[in-house]
Length: 87
Image (tube, rainbow, N blue to C red; front, side, top):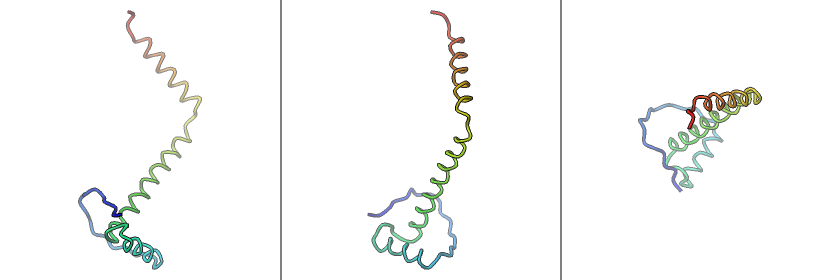
């Protein structure tokens, strides 16, 4: 199973990796999970960045006050109903 990533402009970078991590990476390439090291690293990095974004969203959501959000939502509905014309 080969992972296919969308084609976008690429930039070359140099990485220094732990030898055991590199060995695991090479095993995935040997098992044809990825075409090459670059593709495997790119997929892992993209996955990590997506996870971090979701974690940040969860952290920010946890800061919300549910009672205040409910009040604002209800206030918006009442305001919207007041703006509707009579039929």
